[in-house]
Image (cartoon, rainbow, N blue to C red; front, side, top):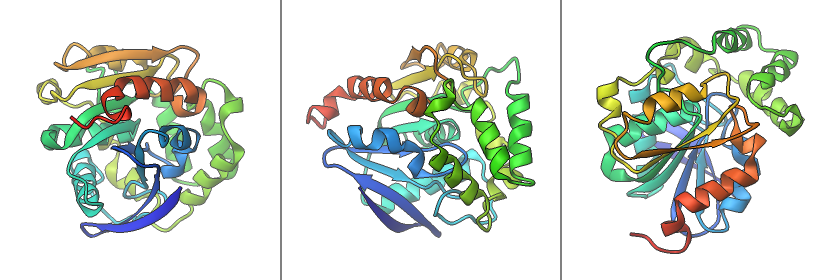
Amino acid sequence: MKQGIVRAGTIQTSYLEAGDGPDLLLIHGAGGGAVNWYEVIGPLSARFRIIAPDVVGFGESDKPSAPYDRPFFAAWLRDFVDAIGVQDVCLVGSSQGGAISLQFAHDYPNRVKKLVLLNAGATGNWDAKSGVSEFLILMLQHTLPTQAMTRHSRRYMVYDLSTFDETLADYFFGVLRMPGAKNWFWEGRGTAVAAMPKEELAQVTTETLLLWGENDSLFPLANAQAALPVMPNAKLQTFSKCGHLPYLDKPRELVEALFEFFHKWSSGGNS
């Protein structure tokens, strides 16, 4: 694995890269950075060139004052893909990163070969709001961040607390203390993960896999079930005994599901 830095538009963007083969981008959620994917980057790199950026506002990438809504994030992702010299990609987005990936597929459909939404925001349950207690934890984290609060929040992220590496918790806390690290939360105000209108969601025609932990309390399975009949080319797969972050709760099962979904590219084909 190696680390690279490129300028995506005006945003200095750090990213991790590993492996050779077809390009597969991993877009992390709110908090931490590309290292969130540490359990699966190695196995996936056996068949793909894995590119995992620190999303603007997170990790070691720039953290400007900005809207931090889905169009802002999607434009950054477009600039990042341009900066690394890639025309079209297979794309996996987790949580808020799923919302970003969904918007990117909507705005730039010719640049996404296949799309995986992993416990993604913006998929909607248009009749209800969820994750109120989790939002309060996030608000506390971004008001007076402490290591204790960072560790407490993991109970909302994973089903099995033993899967959450203490080193990763320390990294989350370290990122929260960086200059500008709170901008995404206070300036975005949750707009990036707000439900995408049904008419826009229906315009995402890319072949899509909704991949969900059944025990997610932040973006419950009901969100995926609501989005499934709206998206014209989507299917749903779930993991039992799995929370908001399947790459921590079920890394082996996640890798297997991604290999199966992307089999055309993972076996060496490109069309």
